[in-house]
Image 1 (cartoon, rainbow, N blue to C red):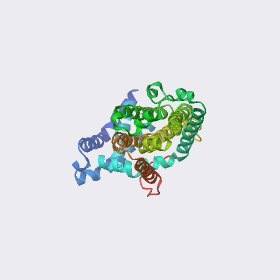
Image 2: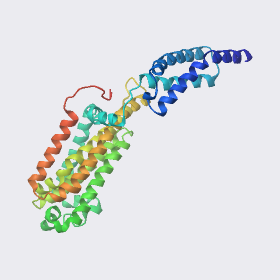
Image 3: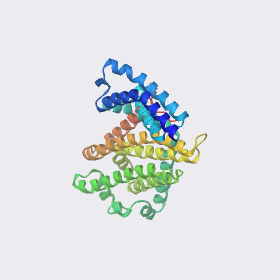
Image 4: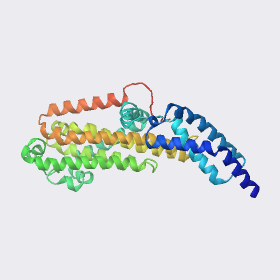
Length: 335
């Protein structure tokens, strides 16, 4: 033990000056920026990094004391990110997210997105058919808080008033707020529960479709199908698309857990989680846009064809932005 401590002392004495200088330069750069270093100091960092890396290799090979090895590992890690890491401003990172990372994450999850869209449509169709056949099914799909005054017993005049009559703005706002909160909650839950082998996410997609289908059926029964479609879709295209993408992010994690391939499950989930997190960042942006469309556009625009035009335009914009071919520079890797 005494001989080992002597070797460690000599090893540190011969090389410690370089380690301390590298640590000082890193601290200076981390405290401000790389611009704080002079040209001479910038050139010295890679040389000192390689020397410290060599010291770490020797320390591991000769089994020097654990504290010294931990110190060198930490120092070399910091130096590695300084030498080889990309340094960009917050604005550049945000720009990269919108220009490359978010669209790349959406493209990588296109299969999961398609599955979630199909599940949502199937839920909507099933609920629509059941409610059209027996209106009492409506209460099985739509929460009681939304039913009041807008259920199967409502008159055509009352339902039309919720879509166009400005005197019913308070009622309209309650319904709109509920639908937005419901879809946002579904989006977050579908992502958060994806790790459970996709099953909760799949059920949430179906359930969300059922609410939509039951809601549409009641208005169609009163001859207001076209009108309610415009009322819903002016913001619903963005909101439902965001919910489906959130489900796709959850599916991405769930399938990585269930089918890790050549990776370990932990590695597979970690890899998929990075892309899913980027996708969820985009979902939050879409929900914010949907909130603006719901809170402003739908309340002010009372003409059905204009509502449909805005809905179609928003759909084209999202599809083009997320899936149109673009340069592959700096995209997020998603396997």
